[in-house]
Image (cartoon, rainbow, N blue to C red; front, top):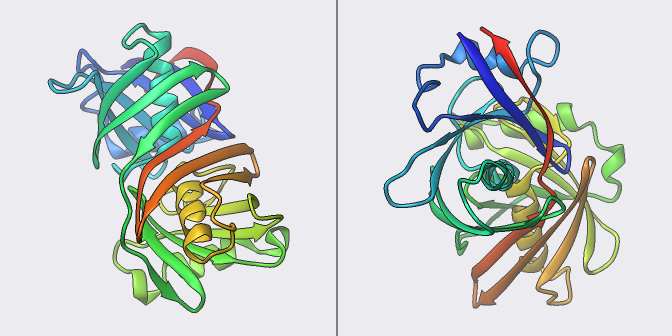
Length: 261
């Protein structure tokens, strides 16, 4: 099979995106997806996205981690899918699309500004000072003094594979405060099984955890500096219910091509 692909990235979080409206790529196997995402033998990506038709929205985003398995919501992947759909004339500037956790609204402003509305969050728990919440994907947010001093692969894997989060595991974020609105973040992603340059649902989880633990002086828009670029998260709060949550940042085209698998 010859695959026509496009590659996009959002703050360094990179994805191979396939136009699957004809269902040409619906039969891809786990091994084939792993090959496509392999940075040495394939195209190279944190994950693969199929853009499918959907009867109740402009398109459906189907997301697979680089381990070949279909995954929970990917925030940066969602924003890159929106940029892809805009570039392919599937949508105009505003859209509603379907993902594994339901329908999302999004706005494409330019390659540097793509906004994705996230689901409401109202459930938080804490463990050893870390905050645990679900922003479309489950996240563990730990606050540290120096994020660059953390062995992300070792410490992230220790939490991801701990008995408390088995069998599904959890994404692990380490966050350092710079001031009340600016924070640094590094993320270990399950399914990738290592650090990614950015994580959209992780940035949202961090922002909500920051506000929830009263580290932001009640600011409703926070800036998260990931290894691969900067993301913004805005939200409103009613009690412990966080709503009108938006993940904001770049979603840019990298290159397109064909590959035989």
